[in-house]
Image 1 (spheres, rainbow, N blue to C red):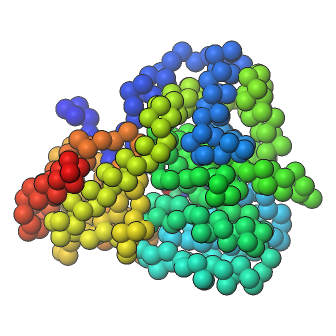
Image 2: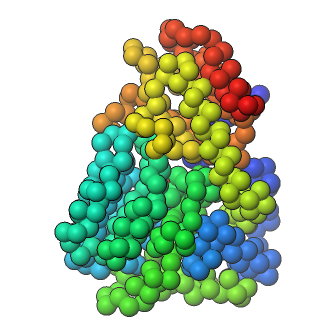
Image 3: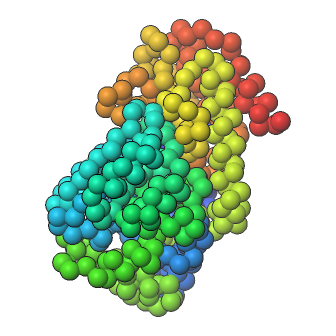
Length: 388
Ligand code: PMP
């Protein structure tokens, strides 16, 4: 903490030293036996974490946006209809991606801080023969959590493929891809998966793979085309060498390390810990009079919290005092309300100590900007809940 600040933004997050050491290993060939083993293990572990024993995992160099792109471009064809269910900034990004491929997009947007209700979704699904729907598990711009199962159930009922943007949720929020019947669950390395930025990760269902195999037109994006990547993933899963585009060897070694840490702890224990810390953090924040952005606690994410600035508090000043204390937090992201709130990431390997330091930094900054509250109250609230 003396030389560096605690990174509590919603990605990239604080990484385990062991993961960072894997990043620093001597780079091997992408067909070296130790790398083949590491890649194969990482793909196997993804299926465990996604709870998708029958799924097809993909790992490619790129960020979460590439994973979003890859998930849909392989499934849609020009002129298809897609339904985008949006709870913030990243829902709208999905609409932009789909439009770029000539898809007819219907966008269902929630009110800020809320979710789109199931009746509205079902009514829309009745209207057209949608090829797929996309939804965001945790929209990082609002801290809103969408419960995936009911939407996945609707998608199945209307025979529509379901794509879950899990960039801010996989390995932090509950996901049961196979049980819930979600066709693609995608993420990026830099969030709850716990690996520095640079990997796009997704798992596709058998149904999604069949739709892709039976498509009539070529995939409109060369790099993201599963024709290029499926043989590579299958080769590594079978511990065989292969090549399409050079894999980011060190990042994949780090992925194997991080996924091993997560599965050693157990994915359900890890998710429970996220929920416990997040709930205690939300209560601590509210105990000093601050308001969170999601309109109900039941739709508040466990991987990050979006918090409104108190009246008359300048966000820029607040965040610089937080940083002066030694913690980095993120400002707002949703354009309509960008300057009115800030975001705290609490996913991956963080523990109560990190939250305590973060709350101390928030209290320090609030005092500096002249907000009146009972100093120490958020720390007391957090401790009571965590220890209780
Ligand atoms: N979806 C969500 C929910 C995200 O939080 C992000 C990144 N913050 C993305 C998509 C895009 O990921 P990336 O920045 O890695 O491209």
